Image (cartoon, rainbow, N blue to C red; front, side):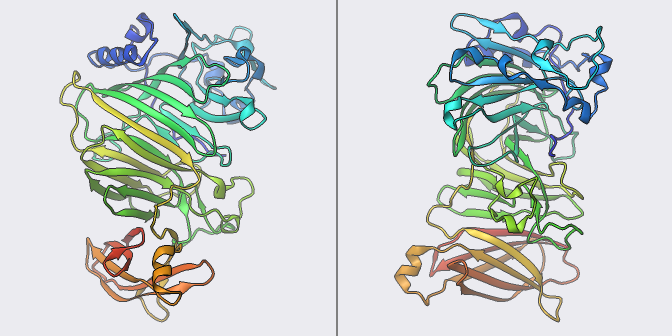
Length: 502
């Protein structure tokens, strides 16, 4: 079982613009978010009935939404919404509305839309004020049966799957003070508006209002399920007050141990992770692959650029033999790729890797951190991007990293790195089958020496295997390592980057 991160849950003020006007468009919602940013933030006061407040995991999971009660179930073969009951970790009700042609209609909580299993709900239990979250089902014609492809639940967290891959990575609206020394904030999507779908629609649209102590935001999601499930996301953000750090297009994943981990936990599985690397592409180069890893201390990696082409977390290892998990199916977790459309200027892709001793909680965070933030609540920050949930984002025309391993050189304390690359057919064809590329290895951030570097053909993969050895002095506690393969001066591979820690 995988859980959303435990979150601080916020609420709208008792009197909120979203509650006093009809939102029928993104422009309407922009005004709501702008007005809300001028108001002081109010902490939540809503309490669930004690019965629902006290539910544990086993009790909450017995509550099931009745499929025939789904929103839009009467509209034919189109998108439908099923809701989650508040309780357990998810205690804060959310406000839902549907946008019809000429009006906005609220979607109130209805207890008759649920079955409660063996739970004995007291007759006088007070109903929650709203649902805790929702899932979106694609038209049955997409895969020939009901297919849940997107879930919003747990403050601003949401996830999606493809027709081929299951749940894994979680995305969220924004990240506030994830690093920087200030207390981290978790703004909520507090209100949603669903656009009424029609049979034949390729995508599903919804609007969402984000609210937190330091920020408000208007969001539009246009989601299209498939082998690649794509979300087109448009947002306008307002800062109530300055923040130490703002992360755009953030998402989180889990990495406990992988092929590069040392020492490995005492576990029957060779690897346990939702993602095994961060991928970054910069316009004009380079294309970066950064294998994930964890250690005793927080690990922070920053990739600065003003020409971001895209970034994402990926699970490149698709071999069941490397996981051996029949329940979690880690080899079938989706990658996520962020493709900027507008609003991504100068800034940095930021990777945070937290120490963990198990697989239940997400411990990896990736996001875009803009250099310039609005100075006042009246100044909007406008962003648009595509969020693709898919098998892989391929680095076009380059040799892709397919594995990263490390260890000690025999009878030595020198470090050995072994990186396998997929084949790059153009260079190989031009030079002949016996040709091998050169590699560059560059160290920074601490003292170290490259003792040896070479490349050989890997006949098992059809690609190349790169080796290099490092002599790391005792006084060095951190090294940033960069390696790439070349054909003369031309780079033919992804830029492999790694953070070594003692």
